[in-house]
Length: 208
Image (cartoon, rainbow, N blue to C red; front, side, top):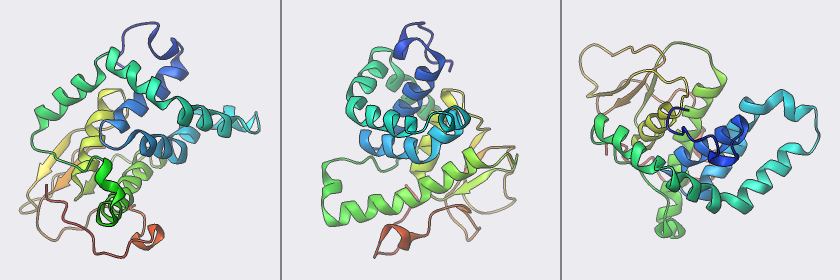
């Protein structure tokens, strides 16, 4: 976690720093509560799986704590300038403009679009946390590219992140992420089926 040098950040322990920096990286691109939900559904078992299994109910306790205290955790990230450093990393890559959940997500169209994005995000998390392959992950979702940049900043195993127009030879960065901007190449191999989120619209354009 190179972005946080202070020994007292996020409680000072390695485990709490993992939780805090990961939540801040996710919440830089989605709402705070969505960040907690993604962390609970995908990250917590990967980071603390064996330890949690030794203490029944501990996962539920941690998740409840995160929901109750997510604002304080995000404020800690602000104190340590994580958001500014994430923005610097994103600026280096270029024009990645993803959906950030906000008040307009409460409207029907906004909620459906956000649920659609969730399907793409969850697919990326399956590749990141449940595979050990050095093959890259190809996606058409800009928000997946943004999240990949932020998670890479805090030490997650993500290789080069590339924007590809979809023509010519397919880039193959080891353990990298390729944002596909055109063409008909297959992408988002592990995404959640859209109907599992009760999404009733066609996928929105991800060429942002």
